Image (tube, rainbow, N blue to C red):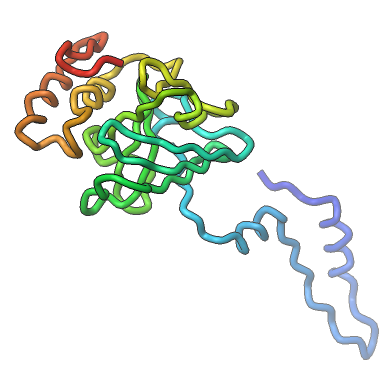
Length: 211
């Protein structure tokens, strides 16, 4: 749909007038929307909007005002999240470095548990569920905010989506909690297989951390 500024019609009318003798023809005026101008001059900061979260669960991150949060996952990695307008800019501050080929960080919450994921460069979704780990917390302020809220929700030491239901993703993150990154270490293989078969509705295996 095309939206025309009230000033556009007079401008076009002025452009259509013929120049008087001896007067150089006026160069057509170019009308640019303020939003486009701002985008053209804005610095290229890497803001990772949680597209996969919006598609899978309807749970989006970030409140209208800017907020900062110190995040930590089950592997002891720490991150800084600067959230605004439904997106969070994520930076790892300590812990095990990102796996090779997965330099980006994104938030994911397709079910009940909120996780932070390593992802391929310039993408907004993890390659697979095992590339994510659940976020741990002691208070609501330790969790990324849900849309329209100043902070997230911390229950049983985990950041959660209050509207989400347990899924296989949640079971994977619970069973791999504290085992390190990835899913192919000997101690991870059996746990990952159990999580993949959590049933419908999903029940996290008793030997795994409980959400």
